[in-house]
Length: 116
Image (cartoon, rainbow, N blue to C red; front, top):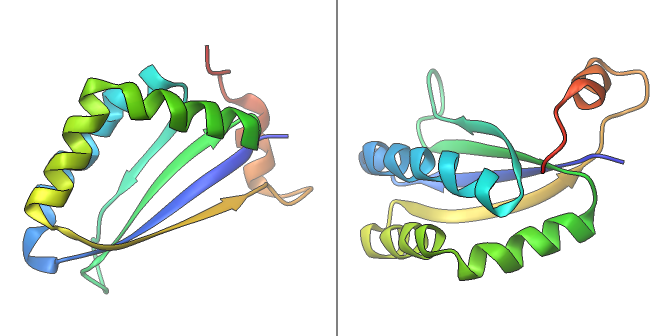
C-alpha cells in the first residue's frame, strides 16, 4: 500500500525565499535517498506562512529506510543545517496518509513510477 508523507511547515512569512531554496534542494536529495517526491507547495493566496511537502513511499518501512539514508547524505545534512541556521521553519508536522478507496488520488498512486 502506498503511503503519502505530508509535511506541514509553519514558516516565518518574511523568509519564504529561503524556504523555497530549501525546498528546491530537496528535489534532488529526496529521490536520491529513496523518496518519491510529489513536490513542495508554497503559499500563494490566503495564509502566507504554511507550506507543504508531499512524498510517497511504498510502506512505512521504506520511509524508515529513507530516513536512515537521509541522515548519511551530505546534501541532506547541509540542507538541515541551512534550515537551523536561517530559522525560516517555525514548526513542522508529519502526517502519513493512504488514498481512500475509490478516490481520485487512488488513480495517481496506482499510476506512479516506483522508486528504484
